[in-house]
Image 1 (cartoon, rainbow, N blue to C red):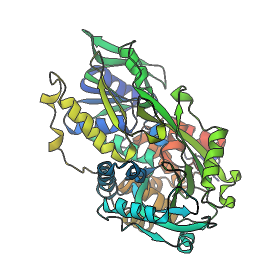
Image 2 (cartoon, rainbow, N blue to C red):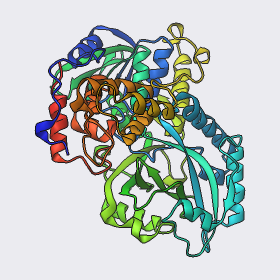
Image 3 (cartoon, rainbow, N blue to C red):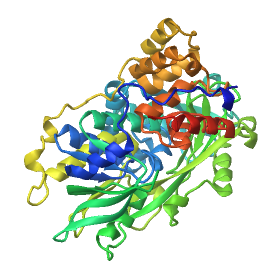
Image 4 (cartoon, helix red, strand yellow):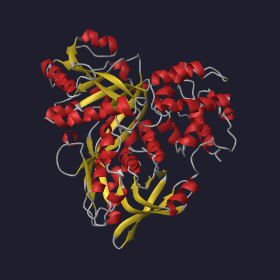
Amino acid sequence: MTTLQSVPALGTHPASGSLPSRAETREQLSKAAYDLLVIGGGILGISTAWHAAQSGLRVALVDAGDFAGATSSASSKLLHGGLRYLQTGAVKLVAENHFERRAVSREVAPHLANPLTFYLPVYKGGPHGAAKLGAGVFAYSALSAFGDGVGHVISPARARRDVPELRTDNLKAVAVYGDDQMNDARMALMTVRAAVEAGAVVLNHAAVTGLRFTKGRVTGADLQDRTDGTEFGVNARLVLNATGPWVDHLRRMENPDAAPSIRLSKGAHLVLKRTRPWKAALATPIDKYRITFALPWEDMLLLGTTDEEYEGDPADVAVTEKDTAQILDEAAFSIRDQQLSRDLITYSFAGLRVLPGGPGDTSKAKRETVVTEGRGGMLSVAGGKWTTFRHIGRTVMNKLAALPGHPLAEDMEPIAHLPKKLPLPGIANPNAVAHRLLVDGGTPGPRMAADTARHLATHYGSLSFDIARTANENPALAERIHPDAPEIWAQVAYARDHEWAETADDVLRRRTTLTIRGLATDEIRAGVESMLGDRG
C-alpha cells in the first residue's frame, strides 16, 4: 500500500488548464454583476445554473459545503421511472421519468450511467401476486417503449443464477424489468463542469451569512469562504434558493415570518462487501407501497432505503442503529443471511428528501418540484428526484421567463430554443475508453490495470485520458491509492486541479470511492490532504 512517505509530490505548479484560485474566483464573484445567483450546489441548483448559463445569463453558483455534498450524493444511485408510482395510477409521471432516464443514460451521460436489470421477487404471502407484478413490469417497460426489453416473469432457479444470494424459500416467481444506475456525486460534478463550460462562475465551501436587499428586493448575498474565513459578496438581479433541506432557513433570511414550506424524509443506506458477484439488482416489496433495494454498485452491494419523517437539523442527519437494523431486516426478506453480516458493512449514509409541506405518510408523498417566490423576490426551488434533474432545470428556467416584470426574459434565450439533449463533459462510449486506456495507457509509463481503466472510463469518460497523461508524466501518480480499490493518485491531483476538491472528504467521499469502500484510512487521508495542500 502507498505509505504517507511515498505520496506523490507534484511540486507547487498545478496542471495546465486548471481552475482559477479561490481568491481569483472570489474577486470575480465580488466585482461582476450577475443575472442569477444560485445558492445551493445540490443537483437542483447545479442543473438550474447549467441551463441558465446555456440560456446566456450571467450565472453564479455557491454552496456552503461541497457540490453534491449532502443529499445529492446520498441517493439510491438510480435513474428510474418509478415502478411504485404505477400503484397510484401516475402513468404519465412514469412515462416522463422514463424519457428523462433514457435521455441521460443513452445520450446525455452514457459514460456516467449504466443499464441495470432488476429482479422483483414474489414470495408466498407477500403483498403482491405474480400475475399482478408480471402485468406491472410489462406496463412499466411499455411506458419506456420497451427500450430496456419487455418486462416479464422468470423462475426462481433462473434468478438465483444471477443473484447467488437470493433467498428461494417460498419464492414463487421473479418479475424482471430494466432501469439505470449511476454514481450520483460524479454525475453532479460533471454537471457543474458543464455549467462552468457554459459560462457559470462557481464556488463551493462558501456559506451565505446574509442576503443583500435593494428597495426591499433580494439582490445578492454576503458570504464567507469556509476555507480561510474571507468575507465577500455577490450582487445579482435575481437570487435562487436551491438549498434543499435548508430552503426554509434561507427563506427566513428573506422574511423572518415565512411559514414552513417543506417537510423532510430521511433515507438511509448501507454499503456492504459482496460475498459473490451479482448480475442483477433486487427490488423487494415490503408492503403495498414500499420497496427495498439491493443494488450491485461500485463492486459493492448497496442496501436501502428507509423513509421516515425527519424534524432535526439537516446537518445532523445520520444513520442510526434503528436504521441499520431496519435495512438489514427488510433485506432479509429476499437475501440470504451470509450476505447480510454486519461485518461486511463498509459504510452507511443518509440523505433527506425534500417534500411539499402537508400531512400524510412521507412514503406516499409525491416527489414533485415546487417553485415559490418570497416577499423580497427570491425564488425558492425544492423537491424533485435525481432522474428528472434536467427537467427541473428547464422548469425553473420557464419560471424565470414568466416572472412578473420579466426581469430576465429579455436577456435569456428561451429554453425551448436550447439543444434538447446537450451531453455532459467527457461523453464517450466507456467500453471504447477503457480499451484505449489499456492499449495506450502504458506508454511511456507502467501498464494500467484493467479495473483502473474501467473505473476511469465509467467515472470520467473521455476525460480519463487527461488523468492517464498525468500518470504517465509522473509514474508515482499511476500507483493505486489503496490496493483494494481501482483509484490511482492521479485522480487526487485531477480532483484538486479540475474538480474543486478542497478537503479530504471532497476527494475520498465524492470524487473517488475510497470512503464508501471503507478504505479511507488515516494514512490515506493524510496523503490526500498533503496533495491538496500542494497547489499553486
